[in-house]
Image (cartoon, rainbow, N blue to C red; front, side, top):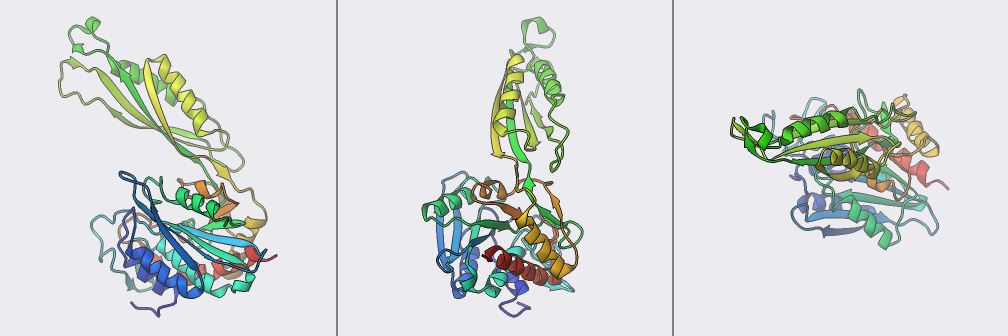
Length: 378
């Protein structure tokens, strides 16, 4: 590696060098444990779930502060999306070129985890309790990742007062954006059953595509909302229509479709599923909703002020509070305590030649240390 062992860049290189396509297990957790143990963290690793969405490895590490002290948690994931083809260098062979570190996971989010570890080393144990909540399945189904970690934390009675998730939230430069909430997400599978027949004799058949088209038009026109003070308007998108009819002269027997709804805190996934199901029933269709996360908001206040103050102290700007983007594991962690997401620039996440600025890694470590110190203050 091109860096000394205990720098944010050096730790990021070590993590990137561990191939960890979701669901991650084994080597990448070995690497993280080896970094945390010398800092006084008690590391607990466990595996949950069965195929097809498991097994998933998770890690909870805690460094206990004085009795009665506050508890601050860093949270994130070590799994990454598949790298794909066309990289300028091997995706799991980290490489520094100029002022950038390249490798899958550099920004999403092994770089942030490395910065968290360096930050933890700067916070004295006497300041309070620090923990790491790390899953190997955020990029995948996320059924046995952070959800299982939360169950473990509740079981051992180790609940943080505040939690920071290191997702890459910055847009144009490090520090310009933090997430204080996220929209909810639900997918809904639709099926219309008809009656097959010859296209020349439509009166003897029941074309499910006709009913599907009418139903989708009504669903797309279904009023949701115009947004709120902190959330953009909810939106419903048709993401798939399939019939699978190889014949040109046959009316098929059934048709399928899928919807995705990203919604703000004026709705719940259950309510939206019920609304879609009611419209589907009018058209003789069935609906199967699956809620992947509810909308949530950490209202601007003391915690967001801590984050903004830390960013301003290091970088001279204050981050914009946002709820845009997709989902993250903050949708689960918000059930434990207030949660905010803040991390690196997201321009190259999930892309070939994913890269992070070396200077951003160092700055992020300093910002994280400031946030943790402020969060643990009595």
